[in-house]
Amino acid sequence: MADQKKWAKELSAKCGVDAKVLEFATEELSESCGGDSLTSRKVIEELTTSCHLNEEELRKFIKDVSKNCPMDVKKLHDEVVEAEGNKELAFKAAYKASGRPL
Image (cartoon, rainbow, N blue to C red; front, side):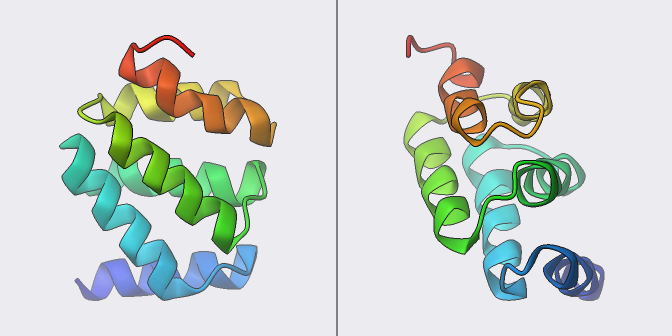
């Protein structure tokens, strides 16, 4: 758990999103999607550093993911990476990873 807090603190310093929000987002992805915490962290890192999601956008993304679960968090990660920093495509990643039509 200390590792999770340290990771969230370091990422918070890079992206400006509150560390507690980052921790919540990681836990939610892990629980909702049945994913491992390492992959969930990668998704959060990609969303906040490459796609530049702010705190409000990250919360919305996590809410969208939760509504569309179950899904493969690794596939979600692949879809987020494929968005190549485009916020709009990143938000569509949750739907694409779930296998549901957009």
